[in-house]
Amino acid sequence: MIMNKKKMTIGLIQGVHGVRGEVKVQPLTDDPKRFFDLKEVFVEDKNKKEHLYTIEGVRLHKGLVLIKFETIDSRDESQALRQAFIKITREEAVDLEEDEFFIADLIGIKVCDSSQKTIGTVVDVIQTTGTVNNIEIRLENGKIIFVPFRDVYFKEIDVANQMILSEIPEEFYAL
Image (cartoon, rainbow, N blue to C red; front, side, top):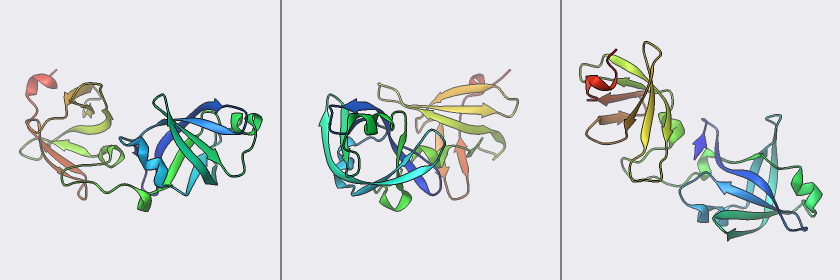
């Protein structure tokens, strides 16, 4: 799930499904079933303009989410939404468990060593098909490194203070 401070991106409209206006959505959230609980969403078009749509129906199909919006009734109308992002307000976000974070809340956070010296800044969290995601960090010298997102490397994550205390072995980032 990608988000900024006000809206969260939870899907990407990849194309159309059928002739009655349904769109195929690639979920950008861990739980595609969350779309069933939504009544309205914002659709951000190619010009970064957001439009509010009321959801008429949702169903899952071959790993994608099919959505029918109330005012979209034809293939041509839904085709115009291709490559648009589906967003929700931050208040509609799913509740997180303790020690869970939204990826967007981690992006931009400083990564520091145990003495609180800045190592770099989180650029992204790379979600893998395996069991461990990787944190992409831009070091102070501009170099990019990837570190497995494990407790052994990342000791304390403080989103409120925009800092991650880490114990990343120096060979990960030494010149």
